[in-house]
Image 1: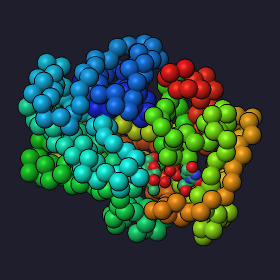
Image 2: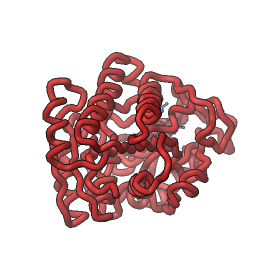
Image 3: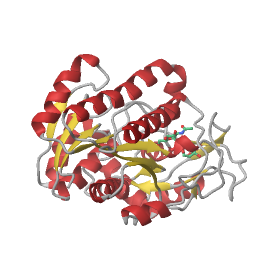
Image 4: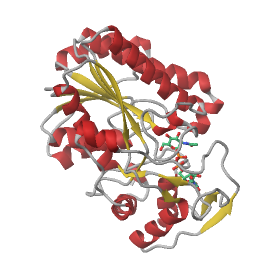
Length: 344
Ligand code: UD1
């Protein structure tokens, strides 16, 4: 049983939802987070929602000076394995500052591996991304599709996947699951935790939500001349609670698995929605106007991508259950109850 779990990046948007699901599954959780893009208040609220407690170690995993105490903490906690989400995640920033992205993302993963090795806790679930597929495959995309990320952020994800595969191939005691997330959106139905971007949101849902709540004037829709049903980009949006439950299922899978090695698994719904469909759904859920304007295509965007989600069903016994309406309603509950995020 993988019971005692180190959760890196556990105070962040996805991490906080994973923490709740881990506690609710009866597991013990040690969050390692440096709050560089997250808030301590999220940790308090995780405990409230799940009616339990997480341990917290405030450290930057990428800083070599912290390696020894991270390894010591992993041992003292009695870790069985880790879910690794800590990292930088802004595509545009990664193009401008590639060295920092490689250092922080790849460096954090390497540090975590060393700490787990020292604690004899050789199991990792890694937060990878559909971004590793680039635009090279027909939809729906299976895990055997070609990989070819188009920016440094995506390349760090693929490098870490490959590193974990090499480690698992060299030592059969390692159990590795790379979860390739499609587009996580929504929030916990309690409205207590959700996405709280530091600056102007890069992603569609937090931007729409800030327009709906009146923090921003209008949404720019990046391109309406793609070869899709309404000309706008199509993505596989997945409710963050479904996504979080996928991590718990991945731990169960690794704990019971008979064979060694690493496995890649898509976490998506299998359905794509366009930008305009997402805007219309959010408008219905929030009962607010969402003014938008068509703008040029964003560099690096692709027309359409959605998952083949059958491997997750087959191996993890997991599938996404929440609809686009649920995603919008829950995202809106979080945004309207916390208009300025955790600062509210
Ligand atoms: C983006 C990243 C991806 C990352 C993921 C994390 C890029 C090119 N890709 O995915 O690597 O893993 O976020 O969640 O940045 N859109 C607008 N207006 C906006 C924002 C977005 O029209 O203000 C459109 C985009 O053109 C796209 C769709 O909304 O068609 C979704 O965009 P976004 O939420 O940024 O996700 P991805 O680009 O799919």
